[in-house]
Amino acid sequence: MRIKPLQLTLLLGPSLVLTLLLLVLPLMVVALMSLTDWQFGAASWNWIGLGNYADLWNDTTFRKSFANTVYYLVVVSVGSIAIGLAVALLIESHDTWRGFYRTAFFMPVASTLIAMAVVWQFLMHPSVGFLNHVLGWFGAEPRNWLKDYDLALPALAAIGIWQMSGLALVMFLAGLKNIPAELRHASLLDGMRHPLDRLLRLTLPMLGPTMLFVVTVCGIRSLQVFDTVHALTQGGPNKSTEVLLHTIYAEGFGFFRMGYAAAMVVVFVGCIFVLTLVQQAGMEKRT
Image (tube, rainbow, N blue to C red; front, side, top):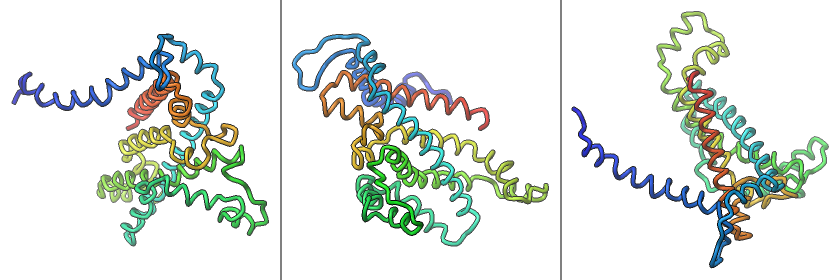
């Protein structure tokens, strides 16, 4: 049955209106705001064109937060996907306690990260933290994980992997369920008896659509890191853990430079858009 234009308009109208009001219109407002020097609470503002973007290019704090965000994106995405896939394969290969393990690994995703940050702050405490006690068992010196310039960002990335690997695990388990059992039996008959051989030639190719979705979701969520930085380090020490969202928050709600913060938001949204396009283009053919 052919849908008439009026029926199509009625069907798509509500979603189009919501998309326009909740997504397109706010982005347009932010883009226009980025071309001004407006400060929060100011009665007047001036058009400055691309002045805010020129300032971003010369802003050492912005460049540092951008580099830290890229580092966090790569480490957390790769780590969480690798751990999630490995644990999913282990759980799927055994029927015992499968539901328990699935729930246990997904708990960090469902829990409030601000509350869990208190636990991680205690674990990484320089004097009474459990991690330093473990180092002491091996004769190593205690470390101030969240105050050390070289260790603070890797420590936050480890927390990000802990949180996001559960999400990757659940999605990989769903993907493994969709692999027909007949293919596995056929692979055994064809001589693929080694687990690594079946993983590379059967499981991973069949997980292509799931892998594409997991990579996209983990990449976007890694770019959106804010909670742990704000709760544990405030971007320190010496900007070593400063990330894009925290810089945007500080500029907009700390220094009230809303026009400058809006320019950062435009760059941030552009990064998410480019990242999604690159991931789609890079993995679509293989999928």
